[in-house]
Image (cartoon, rainbow, N blue to C red):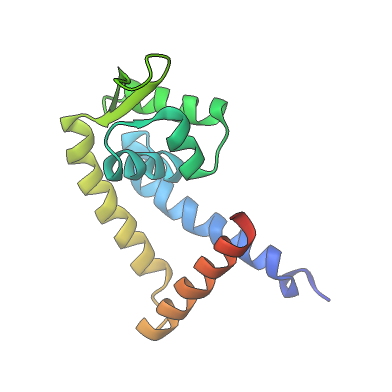
Length: 140
């Protein structure tokens, strides 16, 4: 078998290309795909703890801490002491974060439209359905 006959290689290359396209579009904002993911999680779950955000993104405590540090330094997210557990931080989007997330979502859609341009709507739907199935079955 040739290297490009292996599913894992193809999946990794596709993800690498998609991430590079997204990162290039947002490089002026100092945001990448992983930070975008954290912003979406905070937006969807206002007051989420840093640990829970890491669990949702499937990253360890150190990694989510770095992501949140970068987002706080950029003025996109703020940490507040959790009202439920004073040892934890609750995360909230700032007004800058809310405004920027709208732009980032638009950039994400633009990149996905470009990346999947050769797919029909039905092919995109099948791709998403099958990828979600793989993730659910393999990541829990």
